Structure formats: C-alpha cells, structure tokens
Image (cartoon, rainbow, N blue to C red):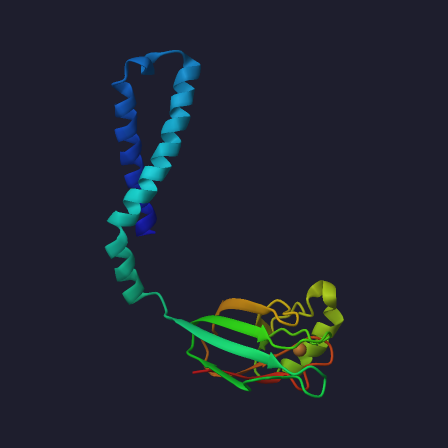
Length: 197
Ligand SMILES: [Cu+2]
C-alpha cells in the first residue's frame, strides 16, 4: 500500500512537471481541442515517466518488503510416466513444502499415447479418492475438477508431451494432504502425499 501511494505521488509530480513544461510552450493556450490533445499526451507520458521513476526510486523498498513479508518460492517438479493404464504413474509419491509457502508446481506428461492425459489436484487430507470420483462426474467440460472445498489447487490437464504449471499458496496448517490425477480411471495409480511442514 505504501508503494502504491509513492507511485501515485511520483506520478503526480511527473504530471506537474510535464504540465508546467507544456505551459511554457507558446501553443499551449490554444483552442480547446488542442488542449485536450495535449492533456492526452501528458497523461501517456506521465504514465511512462512515473513507471520509470518508480522502478528506480522504490527498488530498495521492494527489497525490504521481500526480506520481511514475501515467502520464498518453493518449486516442485513432477513427471507423469507410462503409456498404459497399468504403467502410468507419477515419478514421486511424496511432495513436501513449508506451511504457507508460495508453491510453483510443474507437471510434465512424458507419455506419448492418448488417453494418457493427466493433471494434479491437491486435496484435503484423505480426500483424494472422493475428489477423483467427483472429478470424473465433472467431466471434460469441468476439467475433471469438482467444485469442492476439499480441492485446494489444481493444474490444467497435460496432454502427452505437455508441461503444465500451477502456482498456489500452501495451506497454513501443517499436515499430510493428498495429490491425485483426476482423469477418469487414473486415481488408483496416480496419487500421493502432499506434506505441509
Ligand atoms: Cu492421469
């Protein structure tokens, strides 16, 4: 909020500077349409100038915020392997993050065959099966993701060869949550524990 305030003030300062610049020009007292045109130009120039100035001026402020309030990003990488219902699996059965961490999860589908399409849905503890069965009912139009409080986060569907990404904030409450692929028929082999420390 502080930063926004500063940005706005710098913007105003820039606008004032630019406006006074205009006022010294002989043509600036011309007809109304000309003045409107100048106003538009000033607004655009001000936006650019303010953005430039703010970046330089507020850099130390952003750094201070990062130290005190912004969580470090925790990256998770998962691969879905196998080309048949019998072979398919995630390469990890456990994911681990810190409570309230900002998580970047990347899922790469290494399969070559349809219907080896996968997603990852993070669920409340012990709920992966219920979420997966409800996901089947949600169908393709619902991305196989049910509207449910027990769904904490979900990637889009990754087709064979695709990588999908998901950014979310981990639960604040430590515990053993679940993750599961909710594509129909996959949950039995494609699930694991999402551990929040
Ligand atoms: Cu799957």
